[in-house]
Amino acid sequence: MLASALARCRAEAVTGVLRVAGNAGGLFHLRDGAVVAVDSPGSPGAETLLVGSGRVGAEDWVAALVDSVGTRSLQAALAARGIVGPAEAQALALAAVRDGAFAVAAGQVECCDVVDDVADGPPLPVAGGVDVDGLLSETARRLDAVASLAVPLSPYRDRVVPGRAAAGLTPERREIVAHATGRRNVRDLAFAVGRGLYPVTVEISRMLGEGVLEFASPVASFSFSHGDLATLRPRSEPSGAGRPG
Image (cartoon, rainbow, N blue to C red; front, top):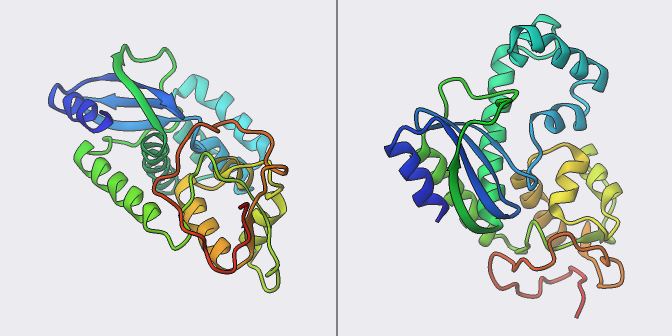
């Protein structure tokens, strides 16, 4: 459904927003049939990737937003303040588009419809947009990669807790372990550490396989925000990774 809707938008050179209803759902911002941004509650956006990761201070981000009101360009405001250069800003915008598309496709898609462009466009669009065919191909590759992980898991359902192997962790892994309380799913952890949903999903699968993390028991994971989502494929019991029976 999502692929055919985006293909139609490309064929009709749509300028507007493809609204995807579902869990997590999202908005695909389009210019002349190309995707310039994706907003989804399932994926950290540009602000979270910059501020949540600690790469940019919250005060600097707010100041750049204020500056961009007059210039209508957040990228120019970030560059003028020496916060993020144009090349890095565009790389970040592209990463957010790809991660947002993955987040939408990895969940449940109920329906898609095109609406007029929202009053406030995306704060950090990809200049020239992303070709729909390339975006769909990359999204399919990521879905296949997640489905074939040694320890398959759902970004929206599975919750994890620290495991037994906690020595010699990288700072990135230590941060994930610190937030793995059993109440956060993979999506929540991506937001907590300020990283994309796809790379965090892959990393958590590896950490589960290595015993750094374990699947949370039903008692620990009592708060479900996306509890009705199925995993991307049937899971087999991973060796050495503790999980509920």
